[in-house]
Image 1 (spheres, rainbow over the protein chains, first blue to last red):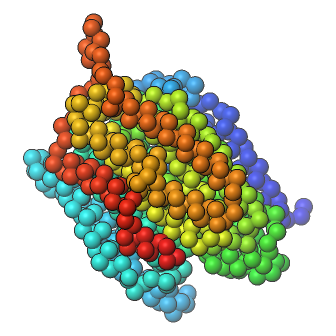
Image 2 (image 1 turned 90 degrees about the horizontal axis):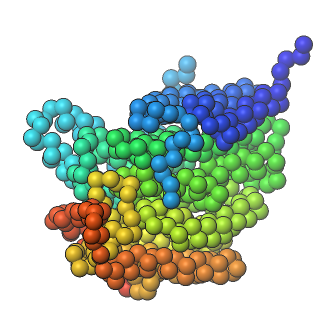
Image 3 (image 1 turned 180 degrees about the vertical axis):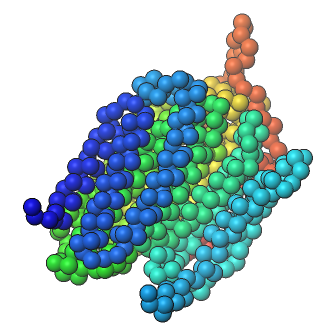
Length: 102
Length: 504
């Protein structure tokens, strides 16, 4: 078996990113949307590490730590909002969260 | 580990250069500490402390405007200090001061913890100030995310209101989506610029200067173009440009009014500060791609923002969608900024005029709104001129300035932008923008008409559906009065601000 090349890594991360992106646009459950958002960040992280490894530059590896921290903060705030909303409305379906309308 | 390298790197950390941001962080932490330490009856003074801290920081910044760091990179190239950066710093501090003044009016109507609100406003302001001076994609991403995550909490701050929580969730999903796009764009640019097989490849590919040199040497690389488009899309979300404006009306309606003002002015200005740095300097070699994208975005944004605002009855949605069209006018300036040096100054002047006029209008909105913050209808303004002539006058001046009626400041802002766009040669876009201005005058005057010319007919059988007007306190009256006055004065005399702008 040949070792994975840079192209393989970039391809996988692009596919992961696309899954996350269309997941956000198409899915109707808030929690699934949230997972898709995280998938987009993970895709970027994978590509960063691969580029860093194959280009021989260190910046990418360091950037990953910042992304992890940001993602953690985002999850903390996001889940708090979802829980608060669920207590009020007893649903996490996007279609039923329609208080704001013309 | 080579200790000398670490020492050299540490010597580049000039903490004095980011003194205002450090001040804000310290004040923000002090607020939380004061809440624990002080007895309950003194808690009412903590917002005053936040406000005076902000005013002090702004005074210090203006006093030390020509700081020694100007024109230099600090923190190993993470930050670049420029005059434009100093102007944006002052801008964000001014926004934060006004948000705090509005919050005192608005939060008084809710049973909510107060102190955390001011804490978040200070943190977000500090992050915006760093964002406007960033010179490195790591700095840009971290500062932008600090701003965005702070806004998630602020938008859903009225957590007993379903509207506020839903707005928070919508902003969260849209904001995180745009951050994902931005991040993937950064990663692609980093990967391409570090490729050892390409000319002018660089080890520090996320530094703006190194990246600009790489892009200049490879002006038609496919992956780099894809990265640039993704980065622009991520920034377009923040400024609410078409087709990334879908979140604007809902989030603006659900968010507490001071936060709506913060989003409309602060967040948008931060987006434009970043966009100017990126489009003018970093992506300069890719103007063949960036300029058409920005032109298409500006045209669509102006058309959509104005047409969608025509049918709105909720004033928060109305001002949100009119803000979208203002983003379109500013994009027109960004397009011109690639070739016309004056355009950058025109954008800053427009932002200041927009700040003054918007906060005058938002200030009136906080006084007219009741306990249900998301329900602010045009009908609630009927008879305002009779009941509170002061508020009605401020509203008329603010809306007139937003619409661009001469001789108010908003007119001069639009004039500067249009002149630079004319010099830049985007003639048909200019015609479109002029048509947009005409449409905007229609809906702004619908609002003024509601306040001045409509008599309020109380329904016979039910209670008055209009919320009671909040009496104007001394501080908010002074603020609103000076904002209205500034809108008029800045239209006649641009002063040192105008001088600095036209020198560019």
